[in-house]
Amino acid sequence: MQHEEIIQSNPEILGGVPLFTGTRVPVRSLFDHLEAGDSIDDFLKGFPSVRREQVIALLEISQEVPS
Image (cartoon, helix red, strand yellow):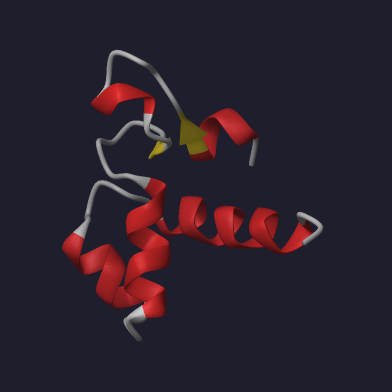
């Protein structure tokens, strides 16, 4: 999955906050839910416009970034 299929950022949409592509769901929302102990399925139920493939790809990308 290409980066632009996962995340988009547009200064005219929510002030440029990174969003899941094709949605108005901030990427940060996923991490907030996971940190709170929610499962990916719980997150997807709350945000049906986000695709499971986007979540999985984002998590994979986040693991590749050096800390």
